[in-house]
Length: 167
Ligand code: HEM
Image (tube, rainbow, N blue to C red; front, side, top):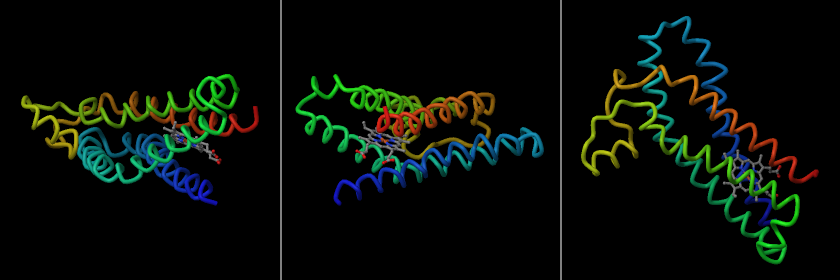
């Protein structure tokens, strides 16, 4: 029962996270052509800033529950050596590697997407936490590459998550 609740929290957070990335690629990117780059840059900046400020609420429980279950499986299988010898353990570890890749994209996004002018450590931490600067600092040239990569990672994670139970 407890395990099922942890899985449920993990799944809800996963849907929220990958859903936001899918919305950016499938809905927002095509709308760019209609609204033009100037408006797109402004809207995308405010959207990105809001996502960056709100999404830790989903991402922190997603990764906490993920690692909690990961180490639970390692323990159940009698230690890391026995765990990694199984196909389940290998796929779960691969899924974790993809998930850490996606987390790196999310965590680094204020620096990938924005021209930031902060030179002090405090300024960089502030930018990391709340995204400082304005719409003119948003690099729309990087929008497609980073979002396509993030969606690719997200889909691989979900596919591996299901494969690990059937292979
Ligand atoms: C973007 C990040 C992530 C996404 C989208 C994601 C998605 C999923 C999905 C869809 C499942 C299948 C659940 C089911 O059908 O029962 C799952 C299961 C699982 N995930 Fe994640 N996950 C993510 C991050 C992580 C991380 C970082 C870990 C830690 C290593 C992790 C560990 C697990 C484990 C152990 C299960 C198996 C649950 C069970 O025992 O039933 N996940 N995940």
